[in-house]
Image (tube, rainbow, N blue to C red; front, top):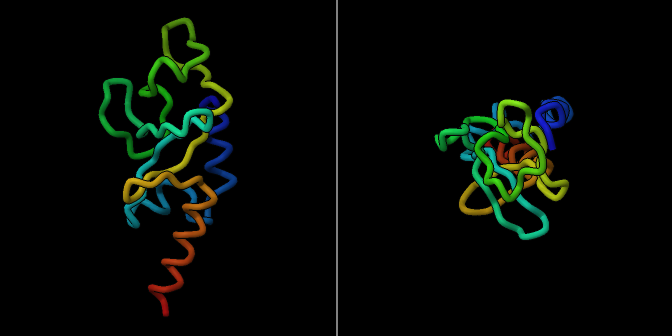
Length: 109
C-alpha cells in the first residue's frame, strides 16, 4: 500500500460514504488493519497525532516494507488495508459506505 493507492481508493469510494470526508460526521475515524494479524491501527501523523484522513507515515515499523531516501514510509505489507474504526470496530471502506448509506437513508425517513 502506498500513497497513490490510497488516493485511488478515495476516488473509487467517493460518493459511497467510504471516505473520511463523507463519514467523519457519523463517528468513523480513518484506520488500517493488518489482515494477517487482525490488528487495527489508527491513522496518525508521523509524530503520533491522530490524522483526519488516511496517512501511512504514522504506522508501526512492523507494517513497513519500504522507506524512501529521507525515511518516509513508501510501502506497507500487502496484508494492510485502509478502512475506519467506529465504536471499537474496524470497517472496510465498503462496509463503512454501506453503514453511511443506511444511516443517511434512516435520517431522511
